[in-house]
Amino acid sequence: MEANEAINVPNLSLKFFVILSRAFRSVNERVEEDVKGYGLNLTEFAVLELLYHKGDQPIQHIGKKVLLSSGSITYVVDKLEKKNFLLRKPCPKDRRVTWASITEEGKQFMDTVFPKHEEAIEEIVGGLTDSEKEEMMVLLKKLGFHAEKL
Image (cartoon, rainbow, N blue to C red; front, side, top):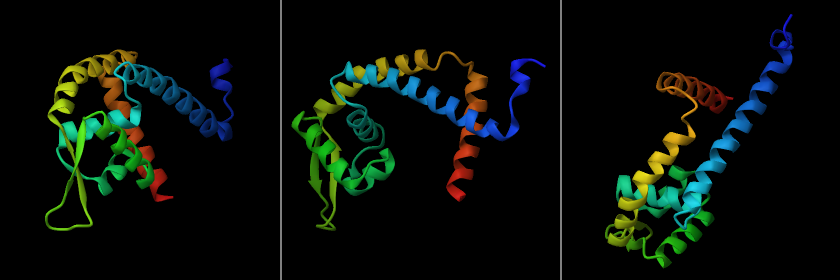
């Protein structure tokens, strides 16, 4: 029996989790390096990318979309506002709601860096073929939905 065949079935889930975690960490570290080259951290880039592609967003909803707590989102919005990449706009219909809006400077910045970022992502995940990426996406969604139900 080869070493790969000797995997103890009860430990297979643990082994899978370790491999998944290490792969995510490696990919995430490369993505962080890319984003830092643009003078942003991952969270700032995620918020800016959301506004760039989806338009104005209520600040209260950004955290859910980029997986951040409300306290953290305020800090990130403050940092992006200081860089003149976004601005806050009061909601005319509900004074309790504030919208984040990408500025022209933020749009120009993303027009320049986003294509480079896309190329970096392509290289980072280039160890898989397109069909392997599609298969992996299906399986990871299945895993995520299962975990959410628990």
